[in-house]
Length: 464
Image (cartoon, rainbow, N blue to C red; front, side, top):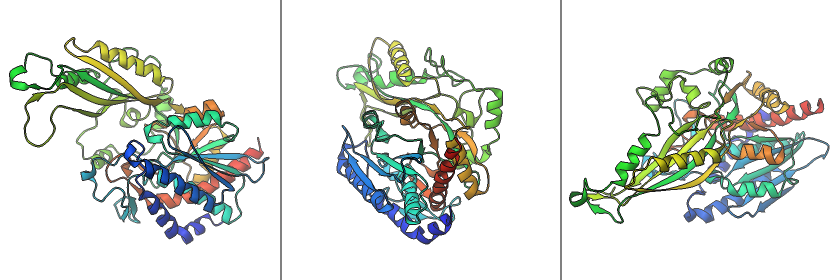
């Protein structure tokens, strides 16, 4: 495959501007206020796929937000790559921590990105990485170098659990038939250290409500006589970890996959500076489960974290009340063999059991998904490795990620396909946080590398 780099350089300004226009649309799936913008984004993706060379592109209605399906089939005897991505984004809150408005993209130079990075919600997760695949298709069709068939499935609910995607996949297995699934919704170790994500953690996400008295009470008249739901909730949450940061829910670790010393040793070969890690986060020390390194804690070990907590009066000034209710949102990142539904039930039973009689507890499961490990001996992995080697000049390192893409295990179950995770983001890109960004170098490098995956995958498939 020739001229990928030169084509990208020739069209880079247009590629950047097209992405910026897409990032201007606030496609926040978690907030129904933005419903029109989410749907508008789906139609913009449809136009982009049509211009890139898909023969057919459909807006597929679902019980939730639509899925954009596109395909270009050149020969039924050739292998088919199914590209998955999502066009919805996380809420931008807290807005006041952004240096520039989250949906007014700006390009700024940083220490890691001297060539510039695009700052906007969704820049890396996942509009920027998803759009790399659209532009990669454009290169292959415009230069007549598409070596195999390609399908696209771009959804609008990934940030809220992908419920409609499961419905769609189950009903469209023939339409989605493929030989490998390709996703860019992960990262790599560094700009000069390419890596391929080989494992994802699962997820269980719940909301808890603790109720005390039937109304907010005067803290002077009632303080010390009735349970304060906020105090109680804080104690209950604190009890979920012991002094070694081990999760105390009975049965939580029963099915946790324990990696061998050899596997942990291989993981430890990945370049990592603890000092740089702490410096980048402006922290004095790391914190986590005893007996594991930082990279192990955030990839091969399960976690439990409070994502939000509220109750009572939080406005300006003072209001001395004992709140009637207190709330928290809690996520548990899970490792392979931990079933998210089972973990959710274990959490529910335990949390209810530790509540004092003075309060009542209500637990609402939101969404979840299974962890996933992809084999490194598949032709898909080998094709990705070869593609990175061609453009980076070095063999990528296999790496397990701490993040979750719950639909990956669904794909294997329903479509019987392995997934290859070719991410081009960096840990410093602040996904899900204020000032999310995506390096222009990373964006263009992804467009340059992805067509080579198609080339190597097609060639390796011939030998099977």
